[in-house]
Length: 475
Image (cartoon, rainbow, N blue to C red; front, side, top):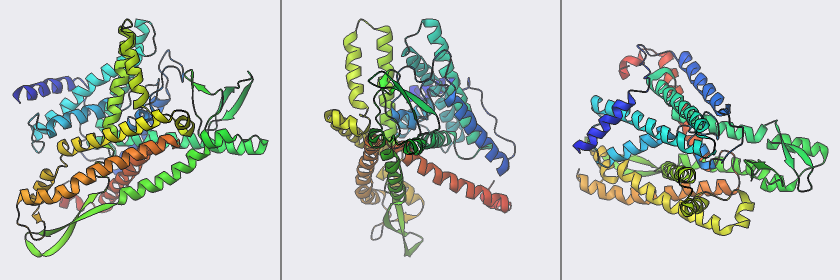
């Protein structure tokens, strides 16, 4: 344990290299915080639209759609790494602390500071490794590769600093949540309304142009009498390539599926499983403790995305530095084939085995990772029982016994963890099959983040209107 804490201290020292944003002496007013929040989102959009030198837009291997959504990443831009290093570092440290591999008391300010600084230090290391790994995928000369890697790393560093500034009170919410929401919203709006045209080389050798956004395409093609059912239903247009590979365009099927899936996601977000409880100080009073139906939220898919990202990085490094071991690169490519989904209905039709294997792997991994997160993320029956007893709550007909309460909670927690993991994985699979704009996990994340932001804004607005409330809540 001592050695583990010592390693954490080394990471914390490395974290001090990142320029730290000072906490504001006084809490900024709501107008300032909203302005800062919008400015941070604008900076993120600018980074996600700025292709690093000397790359060109759409060149090189494309990131899996899941990674682009979960990590708010955009291929070949300053946001190539997105929030991946921050999220990955946070989850790794959380797993180590939650699994008692490192003994930290997060209620202690010193331990909490060590946790935060170590997270920043590990994020720096991950950002450096990922920057090099993704830069190698472009097969450029060593000096240009180093330049591209440095630009990727700088982009990740800027996002880390923006996230810290928002969390310290300059903005609202968290930078991670804002960037994910911004990325999902950008994807949905772009797929729906993008007025830009794409040039397509037909099999006959001629070139045609189509609007990228599904709504401009439908309007212009309807007026011209050239509606393509293949585009509307499947998003497929022969000759449309991105990065040298066949790609799909936004479709009407995707637009309809996006609306329907959004309704399902909002409904699932609101579902609760209520556990009857009594208050120890008032035995006659009974109440309910609600557990979210999506108990582990999107964490299993997030962890799966990190695993896929790591396999992708290793593949890039093997191809760049170990060309003599071609078998290893081919094995990793085969693994990636089944760790990433076939896109669209046509992809499932032409490669059903890949679709079934991917769905089975994703669902199996989601269940295992969901159960792992329950144990290390503070969601286990034992941890929940401890929290309830500390709050003076027990189950009717039972004494205030942690073991008895844990046994009752286990009947709810583990089935919920398994079921919610399967539901979230199913949303991801359905979104990939029907080309949902922003992806199923993106919609799940976005709806939850919007709810959090609405709650935070309501809270801040109440404090602005009634300043005396600050005294009651200790601000």
